[in-house]
Length: 330
Image (cartoon, rainbow, N blue to C red; front, top):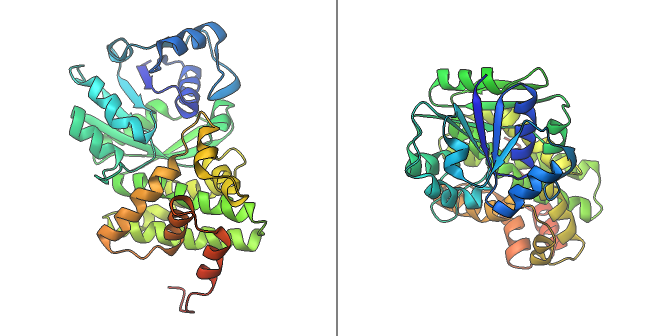
């Protein structure tokens, strides 16, 4: 069985380490903190990011990137998008020959508006690169509950190789060559999930949530297509599928964040209260810049930006959105 390194000790990286270890792979999980490596090794539990889930004795932990990556066939990058470039810089000089790099991070870099695969190619130039995205709540994957996702690569054979080696009977993978669409779907849905949380926090019902998801998917698709993605990708697992999970799940950090600020808590206070990264907060800034760059009208995303960064009353945002001029749906 292939040897695999998972770079990143967050909930998602840990869940993937559990999944792959269960498949029989030799798995090494890297943490940026040497002190936390000791905690993981001793407690066999990720008490910060995936508490209550047992970590097998066969999963290895290290704080040394070179040690984590050497001799591996696959390297899975599971660090938050805001830290992706800094971690990649530490990888320079480590041989990637014959290694397939798989990004599972969901985000768009601030200012550059680069997707994660573009940053990876720019910094470490892997021979083989793929991205994985879809409706994948970490706790559910770690528990072995059925889930499905998409593995995308510009080279179909690379995607198929990852599909074969990472997919399981309970973690079904589909392949795609639309790297742009798969990455943008995974990143932009977090902005709409914050909006869904705001809707929940304001006490709106299922009708409002359904309308928000439908119109939100429209905005994601619009931006994605303008950025070069295929329209049909957004009706699949990395678009609609991921959007539904993130907007509905009680475990969704982005939805929970939106709910908290709708109830009057300051955004920075909410962020400081969690160890986990709320990807949508940074992504809403990138989404706004991307919309300005490609010329897309995304009123939902714009209102989320104004609520978080300009202190706008969410109720005023709702009033504005509901009073926009009537028009045809498509």
